[in-house]
Amino acid sequence: MQKLIQGILEFRRHVFPAYRLTFAKLAQSQKPDCLFIGCADSRVVPNLFASTQPGDLFVVRNVGNLVPKHGDAPGPESSVPAALEFAVQALGVKDIVVCGHSNCGAMKGLLKPPAGLPNVSAWLDNGTPALERMKRSGPLDPAIPDYDQLSQVSVLTQVEHVETYPFIRERVTKGELRVHGWWFDVGTADVHVYDPAQKKFVILDESQAERVLQV
Ligand SMILES: [Zn+2]
Image 1 (cartoon, rainbow, N blue to C red):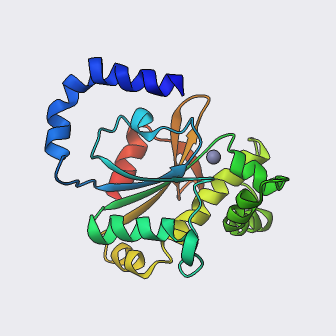
Image 2 (image 1 turned 180 degrees about the horizontal axis):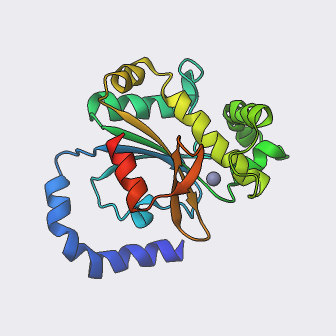
């Protein structure tokens, strides 16, 4: 906590002056063009690895970057559907990114259910379709640890879950919205994107950037 408090004082003293205008402009409204769905993991920091600024990204982070399918998330589990709805229908984002990452505790928990964490276990039920998919179809990259294999397969599953929402499917079909699967390698800080042609995640370099933006 001390780091957090010191960080706020540091921000007020040294960083905020450079952002004064940015925040003043954002004070009354936001117009992000992308919804980012990532893991709550402390190492996955999109503002840093994607160099984004305040106002750029609408962000949802949860344990394991999981997206319940349309109709599967009533009541208290409706935070992800609410974020999808708000980002797409109210803010009009043009892209949705589901981003998994290496060494994800949630993926390890799916492979070996954690003891004594009933809420985590209940939430991880949303990852079961990814687990079943990996058992059925195998990993995209057999060279990486099993929890990273599951994390990559899960990203593709969550992308499909995002597209089960009618207001999203409709816009994707019309070419008004794109849904992307990303995977962040914590050790190298490389962002990988799923390339359907190669059927695997590849580093987001200049050529992949061109492909992603043209899709
Ligand atoms: Zn994680």
